[in-house]
Image (cartoon, rainbow, N blue to C red; front, side, top):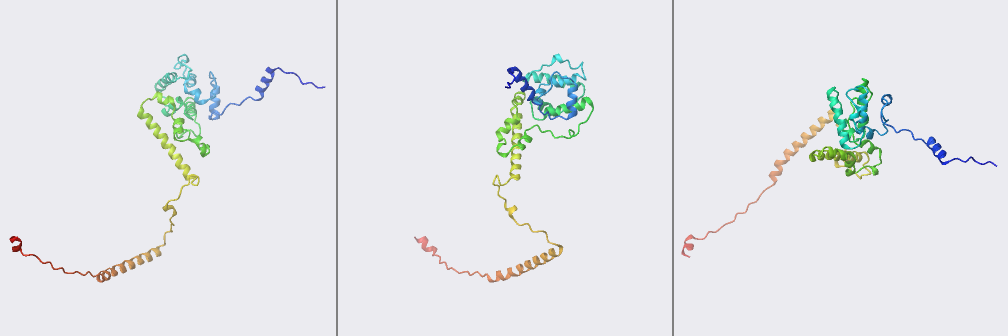
Length: 276
């Protein structure tokens, strides 16, 4: 009789962990950039690009490998609060101004506030600056740190409403860092405008779903332009019609007669009125 070997719960858990180990998530970075990040031997490998690069600690560590004296890592804090992020990025921006290194302000703000795609674009820009290498497809890229690409992948029933779009694209840290009401109102209006444009594009792509009825201009029959001879004939017809119209006008006027009737009005004598 065959008896299976008895295994401890620890061995079963270890085997399950080895068998079902999850692969690392996609970072959205090119292969050469990932190899470069691994060669830097950072204090921890980034798993979530938005979260791990938002406080600027890894960015300072990346620059410290090339400018060791300008980046003392003991002055940077690997925290997640907004004051910590602002303190780290303030030191990084002072160094960028000193070394005459230009990074796009929209990319920096998007990285701080965990906007989608901002951290990936920032790492690629730093890679081109520090290594003097170019990445195909990064030059001339439009800056759009919204969830538009993600919304396009969803079915229409699952896409965000206007209020949800504002919540997804306007972070709380943005409001805290920039408490100006007019500035935040402009950001909200831009998000709503983007949402309305997306909904208009959906109505054009699928008019049956939204019961869009064609206009009178779309229903009208479009005749092709006539040839040169046709234009001459049409001109002649127009002149003939205008001539007949002019000849008909005096005849119509001659036939139209107006009869006036005279009315006699008898006036009273003024002397009789005076006498009364």
